[in-house]
Image (cartoon, rainbow, N blue to C red; front, side, top):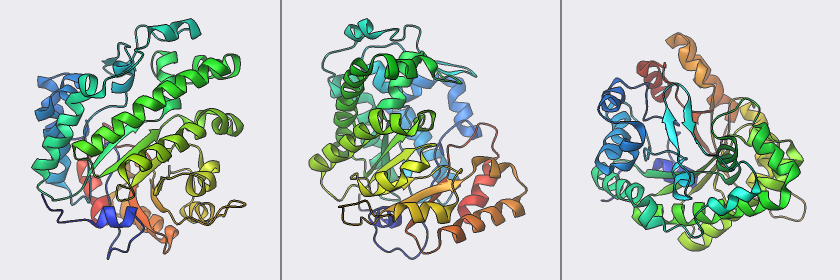
Amino acid sequence: PELKNDCFLRTALGKPCDRTPVWAMRQAGRYLPEFRAEREKADFFTICRTPELACEVTLQPLRRFDLDAAIIFCDIMVIPQALGLEVLMLKGKGPSLPEPLLDPTHLTRLVEKVDIRAELGYVLDAVTLTRQRLEGKVPLIGFSGAPWTLMAYMVEGGGSKTWSLAKTWLYKHPKESHQLLQRITDVVVDYLVAKVEAGAQALQVFDSWAGELAPHIFFTFAFPYLQQIGRRIRERVGHEVPLIVFAKGASYAIPQLAQDTEYNVIGLDWTIEPAEAVKLATTPLEGKPLRRVTLQGNLDPCALFAERDTLAEEVVRMLNGFGSASLIANLGHGMQPNHDPEHLKVFVDT
């Protein structure tokens, strides 16, 4: 169907729009009572694997809020699953891998060549169905986890305070770490391209644990693969599909992400002042022509726990901080389960 509201896409591509487009990471999720009702009927991965259910929960926030984009309901952990690892979603704990990659000998357990259609066809079907059901109301975003973040879960076996097992691989087994990161990268590229073919109109890569790495380690083990994903997807889908990268906690890398990759939009967490992010994103790198990028973010999700007046003031402060920069308003990370939906409405409406 023809797109009725293209403000998000225009802004992502650096074109003018008469207002600031807005959406929220994890806008479909546990903070919504209607999502919790679906979860009572089906477990997390059943929703992901059932196109009808994934479509329904993707559309739920759009019925409540005046959002400028939808993001397909899914999880970054479907890629480790496609690579042959078991992933469970445990209540109150998040993703858990009963048999993680303990050392490089375990790399042989991974699937050699992932058939995206066979392994992840349910996500593609959900994308196509949702694109149809949106009836052109707003664009649909597809997403993936980034190689380092996915590797971290695959080695660690779940979330971690220190990520010491995954980081040990980088220092102790650099060669095998690069092999694993390359294998994940190949799957991510094919997966995201397949999402565009299925109907996704923009793509976001989440490097949720980028901030756990020392900068030189980030530039050795995370950045080259983010760079490669952007370049390879761009070669296959052209220049009309905006690419977004969100490297949480790695604000120091904004100049390189903005100037030395193919991403149109740089996602920001809440730990950087908007004006500082604008400055870093417009810092030319030696020997490279200046690229104009759009920024996305970056309200602290905990600001949604404030009284409504305070919350509105925080949103205005954020918007003013970005000045005239090309901006997609968002949070600096995802919605939290105990957020009040009415407070997201204040954020969106402001």
